Length: 104
Image (cartoon, rainbow, N blue to C red; front, side):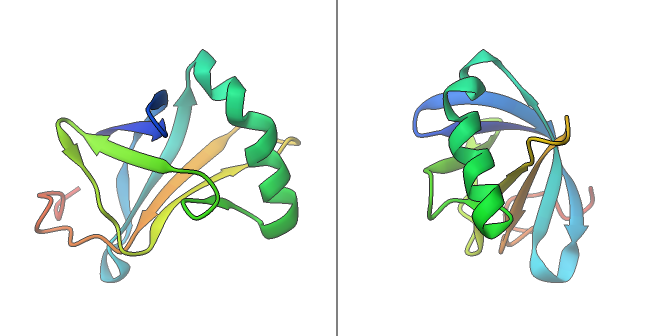
């Protein structure tokens, strides 16, 4: 399921989200960043160095699936290590049935 990834009001990329832990209401996928992501890359990589992930307490991450803005109890996190090309997005604490993604 395609999710649009935002920081504040900036659309920074997309991810093909899949359930990664159904019991925790967690979905995740690889971020395909767009050019706006570059505004935030250094900050996200710095947070990765300190705490292993940049989370929605650090930056105002939002994930939208279609016209639905997800409201995860556990927040949104982005893992972007400078040593690797891949960027991973995870969303935790969703009621998967409520948002209609219980069968991904």
